[in-house]
Length: 394
Image (cartoon, rainbow, N blue to C red; front, top):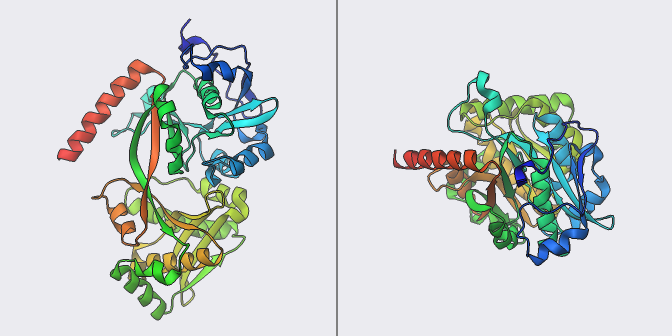
């Protein structure tokens, strides 16, 4: 019997673990003679269909102490994704003698395609198991990473139902490259299609702002001279989040971007608590811009995640002003970096070019993919490559 058929299709209930894979189960994807495979025999697996059944305190403790952990691995973020989107959770937990040694958060999502799938064919659309989007994920491993990582990869097969074509890993921490050779040996292909820009806050803010493009500095200065003020909104109400969402939706629709539902924004406010940081720019009692951040204490970073900017307010330069004020606040709070958020890894991309004007170091968002439905995924990869080549040459 092949690996594709070794696991039953799991029920989608959110109130219980889907499957516990005992140590007697053979590994599907690890070479039979690999020592790591033999060492992983004492590691048990659970696949969870929601945060409710995760060992929450032990999971978050592992995230806090293991390399590469971030706020996006924490159960608070995963709960917000679960409550605020229609994505299906499939979280993998590895334990040895009752102690958590590995975690791999995942959700099931549709594969991003260059063309729309007709509604009547939606059931046939390719789906992926992704760790994690929105946000970032990747394996969290303590101890012997080879054995633990192999068991987590086995858990991926258990977590993937028959309609899942591929597993995709998105990592925030560039240090995840430590797993590159091991993932490559297990059939994962690496790629970098997006990146992040980070400012080093371990120096005076005057030096940070001196690295800004002169036009960005001028905008922030003009905003202050025109009377803009910045307020950090503590304990935002539902009405406040609605106001933010309206501005966010207007901005995303203007650039034809991916707009998350309002339920996700409300779930972030409900689930993240003090980990959510919301700034607004005000001019004479009128709100002219918003920035939503996530406190990533695990990565020692303030992470800019969403903006809410209306075109009619652009003349007040709220974006540069809010970045300036948030950087000052983040520095005073002792954060090591300020993260401008994810951008396409393309020098010609407008978002990348704009963020680059604020200085900062470019760091890749490392991504790995592995086809689980190999024939279908292989055909889709060829089509995707042809499409990207066509766009690049257009």
